[in-house]
Image: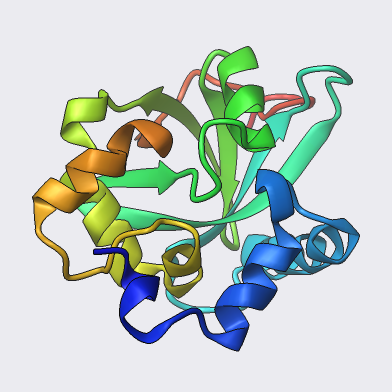
Length: 175
């Protein structure tokens, strides 16, 4: 059962969907995301799972920043596209060959490797446990059985984060 079917959608749930109607942020959501990207990148908030992803835009090459939440699972770190496969940052990461930078007070050059659909369910469940904002977009209750996450796993890309010590920051010089 979808998490919103039991109690119905909340105001926050409806507002969040309005911000991201059609899987894309509207003008207000983009402004809010810019603020959060700045705050997360500066490392002003704890925990350190709140990061800013920096990746070159696939059309302009200009570095684009996205505020995201890192999910940890079995000693690994992951990013989840809560808005699905057509999310701009997902397309940009693919175009950049998986190279990006994560910022939370400091910059970390990383490789983002997409996780196979069959391996995503436990990571998606962990993501919902640590990312309240993701709960309004992924239609499964955080405590649902893994089978429910398996049913939606193909719709939500997940990327394993690994340090990329040989990389340069997108759009800039090396460290």
